[in-house]
Amino acid sequence: MDDHLEAGLLLFGGRSPDGPPGSAIAEAIELTLAAERAGWSEAWVAEHHFNPQLELSSAMTSAAYLLGATTTMRVGTAASVLTVWHPVALAEQARLLHHASGGRFALGVARGMPTIDFEIIGDGEGRGEPAVFAEALDVLAAALGDDEVRADGPTFEFGPVRVMPGRAAEPVPVFVAANNEPTVRIAAARRLPLLLPPFAPLAAKRSILDTYLDEARHLGIVPTGIEHYDGAIVHVADGRDAAVTALQDTWAPWFARVTQDTPLLRPLPFEIGAAELAAMVEHQVAGTAEQVAEQISERSATLGVRRALLIVDGTGDVDEAHRNVHAVAEALDLAPGAVSRS
Figure 1 (tube, helix red, strand yellow):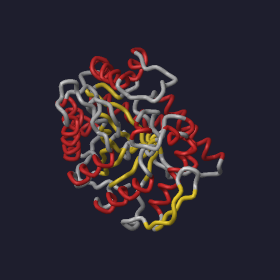
Figure 2 (cartoon, helix red, strand yellow):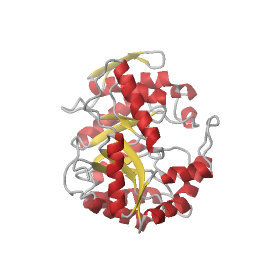
Figure 3 (cartoon, one colour):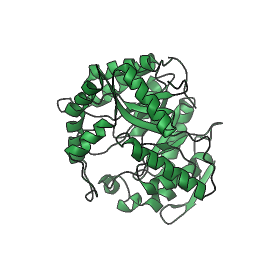
Figure 4 (cartoon, one colour):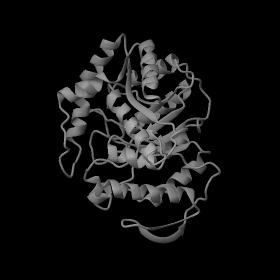
């Protein structure tokens, strides 16, 4: 096992069909506190809007609560949908959380899918276009890195304003959740590390990283010192077959409901059917604790990524999620108490 490998929670905020309102939020909090006690160094929270299967509707608000509830963990957003938030408003919140937590906050942003979020809380579907996302990223970077920010682009245009609170000695780390070529190239051009999609096969993730390197080299950028994150579901059982079967029986039908309840502005160019869901499960980290540790190590070597964000509540069973937290901590020999700011 790679001594330098780091594991963090990826909190998706899924609600079971019979769970009362707020149950997924309460479970995410309890999982995070249990993980901190067990030695996990990070917790990252997702953001989804208007889907009855998903309750974490604001990654920033969730992160703020978790930063206040924990003492040692890095807490990040995975990811705040930049398409529906103004980049300066997001930068203000990020600066505030960075100061309040003593540097434990990390900001992950995403371009998002073409959902009704764009129209209801954003400025329309055009905000999801790659060029506009790139412009928003640049405004965000300026608002995080400078005392004063202004914009004169085609989408964002405003005079100089002072961003508060002031800059910390160490900047807010920014990551980009990316699963398509335009977003990957936009991130690479700005030397921003990636949050790799949790449900993609390793070959697809390797392709994403190769595209990142290709763009960086094309622009003359040396991509050294950039730490990406891998994402996956992890489930510990008596063996690989038992763990995969448990996810096939529970996570796959739940995720099918998630996709059906996602309010799209237009149909996606692909479908997620039974075969696609089965393939997604096959690519996850599953098995005995020892097998899970081996798989995480192998994925790290294959991708060249030493940081993993893991969904531990894939089956929807709270007790199993907590068992996963402790089994993974023991298998990876995680050590409680170290503040994560790297």
